[in-house]
Image 1: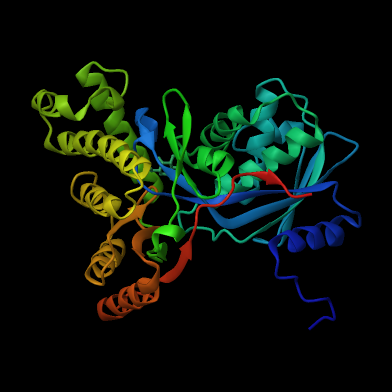
Image 2: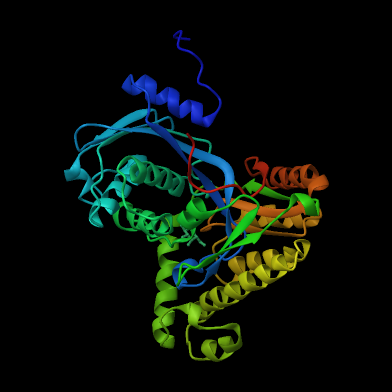
Length: 392
Ligand code: GLA
């Protein structure tokens, strides 16, 4: 031990302590943004379709203050290093790399849309695990964005933040993702899932009260090693866009289940047909899930979750043995439904379970993993939490 005080456990306290230690000053404020899971609606966002994510209680906190010049300094406990950049690096997508690119991307997106972004110092602490598919990157982007908007007194209503943070990720970082993650992280509300129409960006907060139904949402981190997830994501997106062009529609959202067979009949490639079938049926599963939740029938969404998983496994082909094992084991142990959440090729699985059996389901998944020789999964239960916010 060096004699330094042990890091405080609370994420907001860690961000503040990091700020004081790095910059020898008090932050002007702290802004938090959560990770997310998607209840249902996978790979539908960039097809202009429907998604139903919710914000997690795990959060990233940014302690921040303006600095007198137009430069940005960022420290993160995740890498325990400091990155500094000026307007030159911020204005050239790709110049800042690694975790700090999410911060530089937000500065870039704000400047590119004509905002006068103040120079600032940031200290970032996070409870959102990196690489588990819980949108740790959207959490950083959104917390930094919230901080800069307020520190700079920028005229930017929160409804426009998701598109701006998505631009940071698409155009500065270079990941061709949709708008779901940033929307969930920014617009999520405690006790609710966010029903988002990704074409119009209209949202509806859908009550998702697990507690009073005696239910729990188990999140299982598959711990599957990344297997070319970025390239696979981009290729899925490309197939969907090409399929929409062949079908003469602006996006696959414009093909509804009632017209699915006719649309499939016009596509000659079997793989493309399966990709289209996933997206079109997944949009419908989102609408069906929303209808059940509006009617208070939370347990009944289970088969839709499991159906979504089968579609991702068989038609969209984005699952891996670890997530399939977790889903099968959770269902065998009594889950009402289970599915992989997020972009695929690893990440987390959601299982809807009776609150009283969450531990038993987690144990069953862990045992199934041991049988297959996989590294032990992580498990936790979550409730929908609040989106990006200023803490004090
Ligand atoms: C990732 C992307 C999202 C979305 C999902 C799949 O999380 O960031 O935009 O496309 O994959 O639903």
